[in-house]
Structure formats: structure tokens, C-alpha cells
Length: 160
Image (cartoon, rainbow, N blue to C red; front, side, top):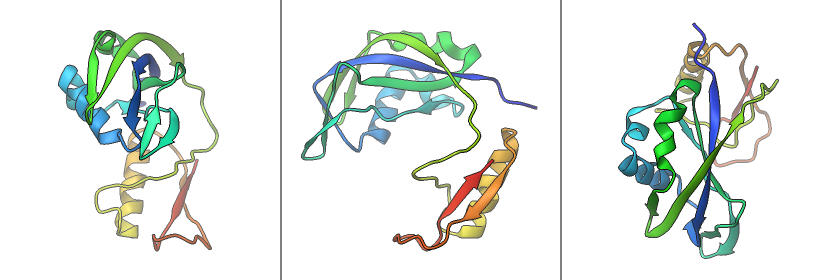
């Protein structure tokens, strides 16, 4: 069974600054104003982009946006975020109007960081990733990268 098609909901944001490392705090703030964010494991939340200004902070620009990847049939569920204010580690961020952006299929998947529960164990990591790929109908595999100079002993890449 193929999963439902998804779409990116792109909300304009207004504010001054947010911490660079704001991912979990953003998830928490969104969950507090819209409980379905916490209850639905089928959505993705992109980090908010901005200009680094030092001291671990990003400036919010007119181009900064909050992007949620949601199932197409759930778009209306997330529209009430418009007009809400989020508190992200003490930084206030107002959520503006929303636009949608369709997804274009890609031939390759690249991610800066992929981890899972027990991701430090290479065989368990690969098994979990294969299970997740199968669940969403992605055909491909995992290829170990050679010569990676990193604090991680095992680095892998996905190919589809």
C-alpha cells in the first residue's frame, strides 16, 4: 500500500531571532498550539532558516518560513496555525499566512544526518532503515561510505 501523497505547507514567520538549534523546541511549541502535531507521526517539520548572527542565533528574514510536510488530505488540519504565536526557547515567533508547495520526485536521497533508536549499532540501524523504506514503498538500499573522517565509526548512505 502506497502512503498518501504529501505537500509542504509554508507559513511566513515574523520575529527577530531564534536559536540555531531550535528543532525540538519548535516541535514542542507547535505541539502546544496544535495538539495534532504531537499526535501525528506522519508529518515532517523543517528547521526555520535564517542568517547566522553569532552566539548561536539566527536572524529571521522576510524569506524565513515554517515548513510542515503533511499528508495532502490533512491540509485543513494545520491551517489554524496561521495567526498563532510560538515561544521557541524564549524567542517569540508569529505565524503568518500559508501557501502550499508540491513535492517533486527525486532519483536520489541525501541527508546530512539520519538516525534511529539504537542507531549507534550499524546492523540495527540498517535493519530499521530497510524496514522504514519498505513501509513507505521506497526501493533501494544502504551503501557504506568509505574513507569518512568523522567521530562516527560507521557512515552509510541510502540509494534508491
